[in-house]
Image (cartoon, rainbow, N blue to C red; front, top):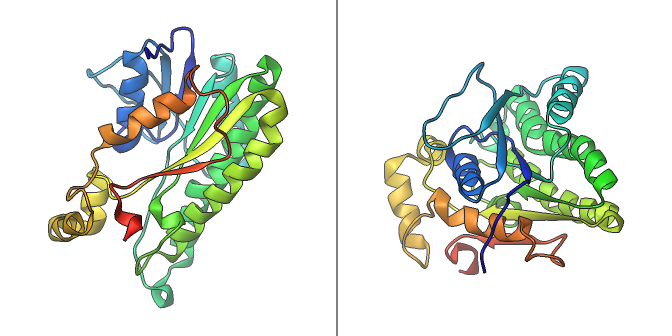
Length: 242
């Protein structure tokens, strides 16, 4: 089975680091034209060739204008990976309203709205693939993650509805939910000691690397997937089985 994304345009949000960055590299290595977004004014990497577009999710009109500008610039996309995400850990009684608003806007509102705009061109082309990056915290939870869990549960549900809405147009929509992944964000949230503790609780005895996540996404977006849609697929080394 040889994957090749030649002549495919792939949009990956929040891909300047972590899981999104590795996904972008993987697509580019398989000949895709890769467009990544981030909040920095400029982004340059020597690890692979990509196009960078600044995308800062704030108010509706500005967001709509930014996304439509990107879509028009590249004349639509064949694949869209809604990867951007943020987290803040606080017990429910200390949840800050601004944090709550930002987490919901970034993790749930943005992928729904981006999909609503990106899918229009896919509908014209009668094909496409959309991947929402979820989390195991959409199906299980942990202390201090109420807003994050709400958004990741939401994206799983939304994936199902999107897949139904777009099925007639031959557009497949799936959610990939990683467990604990060794990224800059995870290190910031958990810290080194907690990461060691979590690794011992995972049946495979290690956190995932970002490279563990990309192959499934490549398959789901490839010509070899013609029938998997509306699914939430967990990649967690067996963590949620215990």
